[in-house]
Length: 126
Image (cartoon, rainbow, N blue to C red; front, side, top):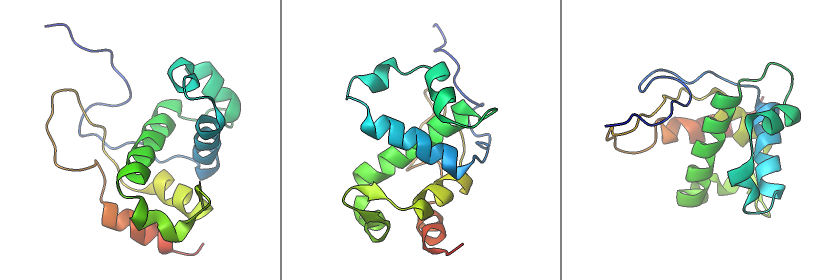
């Protein structure tokens, strides 16, 4: 059986924390792009919207997890969202929450981070 392409870290390992501004930049780029652009976005293009040296794999993974959360538990993020735009507190929480890489064929219950802790972090003022 052929192994799928490797992306990011190994299953179960921690995902690096990232700069919340870079995460917001990627999120905004994806939100403002036409629907099909998400499939054509390459690492080089994402590097252009982030600060030099940004961990694009960790940023992309965290943005993907945030996307899943907003689509399936958006009501929990409602206090930090206005007109479909997320507050900076959400990006700070998504950038620093402890998260693990998922792996192909590994069954898990829920997201690879503690959603309750994520909501708590959103509520913290910095």
